Amino acid sequence: MRKVPEKAGIQEQAEAAFAEALAEALDMREHETGDHSKRVACHTLVLARRFTADPDLLRQIYWGSLLHDVGKIGVSDAVLLKNGAFNEDEWREMRTHPEKGHRIVSKIPGMSEAAEIVLSHEERFDGNGYPRGLKGGQISFGARLFAVIDTLDAMTSDRPYRKALPFDQARAEIIRMSGTQFDPVAVQAFLAEEATLREMVAVKCIQPHDPGISPINHSKE
Image (cartoon, rainbow, N blue to C red; front, side, top):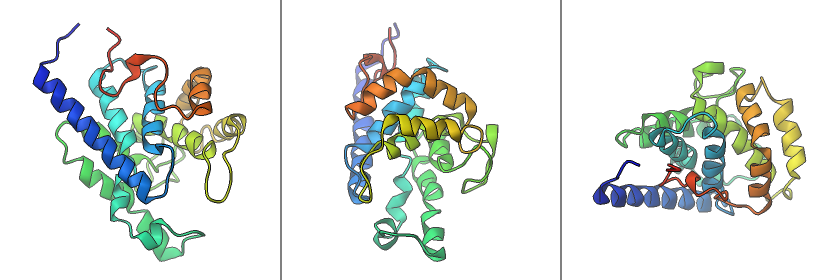
């Protein structure tokens, strides 16, 4: 097991705590409840661990997922908190948040993959997303995993206009959109981890029972 210097460990914990505090502040501004950003970050790691055990990459996927909406700090309250459909100008402003978020996260040393997830989290597998209209493998793999989890969390959480939907309804929608909105590989990973995710969603849990999923201590060693 690789030893981490105490100072490095303390610094990493401080950075993680700051990122989580920032994400929580953004959730509060957007009137999100129940730690949305933390949930989607930890749930995305459930999928990511099927493909990599690299702690640095897992850390970046966690941070990129956690801070996916950080660019909304640059979106006006009139747009961000509007109830109802956006007009063309409002929609244009909202669509700037991935690039604004990328500018923020890309300034963190060694966080290029996290920044790419932030930039790409609104892309679609079929190329009909934004801001760059990326398609398939052009999209960061972390962002492709995140997209499935973000939809799962959105559908299974209460919203001002509706109550949370059942897990099975979200599951059916994710399967239906495989190959269009979602990467089929990410959907298969979701199905493989369905039991774990179903349990986490049921209790609105931000950590599965496996302590190795921690955003700070990724290693199972």
